[in-house]
Image (cartoon, rainbow, N blue to C red):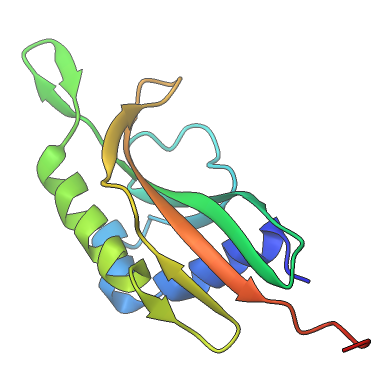
Length: 139
């Protein structure tokens, strides 16, 4: 049986590749579940799982949140939509319609720009996850 931890581990492995690490830079990190405070000037990715069923065919979902430093427009901080677009398209290319040995992922909804409680902006990319349990011994 897979759980939410497995989802974030699997998706992190899919995103921890040069196509993504080049976009987040040498200071950027890929986190599971939480982003440490104080990183508003750094590009990061945070993966979280929203849950998974406990059926023979497990279905779950989660989010990939791509944090990008804000731009200054006059006296206001605004989202860097260009960087968010590039990052989200790179993530989607790696997660959409992917079939791995023990799971698959796909994208159903479009990315959305959101603002975090610390004022930083991120692009939220929801994903779906499916796995077939291989721990049944009574079949």
